[in-house]
Length: 254
Ligand code: ZN
Ligand code: FE
Image (cartoon, rainbow, N blue to C red; front, side):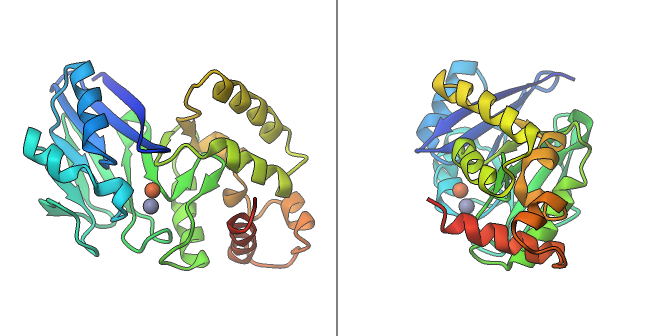
């Protein structure tokens, strides 16, 4: 089994992520931010599109589905709470799907939206977390509660450290600027800040990341960290309360 992954920027700062399985010749897309850029990447690679895994109902994740489905006949799997264009089969927490010879596991990760799903391919050590977990950040809590989002992030943090993570947006540099305000003495975060600055100045993507790295540097996974708690003056709060405070500070951070 060899998987090839094609990650590109679509719209302004969305990632379009395609996964091709060499053995079966099949290709899947995580979401469909826009049809034109995904079609261009498929053609550049010589791939067809067999499957679209939808993470949540926001327009910047579903706008390309109808056109891609019409062009390629791709099957569309995703959440059912909100209408998803072209949905063929609804998925929920604990469901599995097949892609080539691989199992895809569905993890419900509500908080950003109530319908948000993340997808994991355990045999390939891959996770697709869209707008729940970002590199050094997490999605805004639009529909759920901070406690719900914290629980969702804990599910992702429980994946193996060497899991490669693809996310929905290129927000890493901004996320690091914020992270340094709550976790300024974290040497791993400082080192990642230098790496990301170099990637950005070369015009390169800062993703993918890994679960292990995010557990060391992402403040939204580090609500239990004593240094962060001390900085926020919240030594006795619950992890969910510390998370909520960090999320709220990020919401108003400029
Ligand atoms: Zn979203
Ligand atoms: Fe988004």
